[in-house]
Length: 333
Picture 1 (cartoon, rainbow, N blue to C red):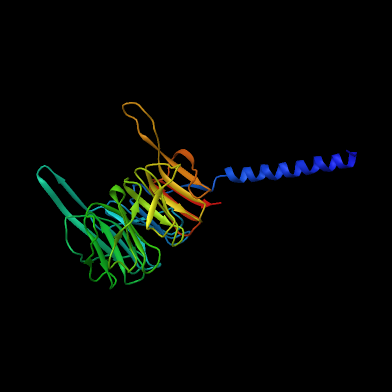
Picture 2: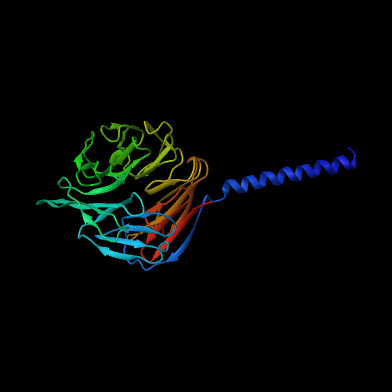
C-alpha cells in the first residue's frame, strides 16, 4: 500500500470512529435537565398547572396557590377545609379545581363530600359550584373548551356542558377509584384508575369502553404523544399504546411506582416516582427521575432527587415540579 493511501485510510478510520463516538454520546445523553430554585412555598401540594413560563397555580389542603414568577414566590388563598386534588385552566382567566374527601371505618363512613370551584378572573376569586352529591372525592378535572368539562373520583364521574352551572353523572363499568382523566381531542378521552382500568370515549363522554390492558397495576398518570401513541404509569408497570388507546402493552424495561409521566415527542420521555428503599426499620423510599430516548424501550434513573409528585408541563418541552420551599424547572434537551 502506498504511503498516501495508508494516510487516507487512517484518516477515514479516525473520522468514522469520531462519528460513532459522537453518536454514542448522544444516545446516553440525558433527555431532560432541571434547575432548582428556592421558593416561599411552605406546604405540599396535590396538583399544579402552569399556563406559561411564569404563571402557574397549585392546590393542596384547601388552598389555591398562585405564582407569577415561575414558582419563586406563591400567594395562597384558603377556599375550603377539604383537600383539593386537581386543578385545570381553560385559558389564562378561566379555571377549575376539584377535591373532597371520604373516609370509612368501623363505625361507618364520614362524608365531607365532593367539591368543585371555578374562577373567571385568573384565580383572584373562586366560586363553589353545585354538583351531584355522593360520598366521594374528585381526583382529576379536565375541560375541552369553556363549556364542556369532566371530573372523576371515587365512584363519582360528572360532566358539564354549560361551564359548570349544572353537572350530570356519567357511568362506565367500574365504580372504584379513578385517578386521571384526559382528552386528546374534542371527542376522544381517557379515564384511568385502580387495577389497570382504562376507559376510552370517542363521543365526548356519552359512552365509555374498557380498553385492553396487560397490566393490572393501579394507574396514576398517563399521557398521549399524539392520537395514536400514549403511555401510562403507576403502581406496577409502564404500559404503552400504539393504537389510540384500544390496547395497552407492558414495556419490557420499565420503572414502577410512577406518579407522573410526560413525553415531549415519540422517543423522549420522563417519569417521576419512587427510587429505592433505604432499608432498616425506619427506612423510606427515595424519589427518582427516569428518562428515555427510545420510546420507553430503556430508561435511565437519577436517584435521590427532590422532585415532587406534583409536576406539570406547560408545553411539550418545559415544565415544573413543586416541593415545599423548592421549585424545579424541567426542560427537554
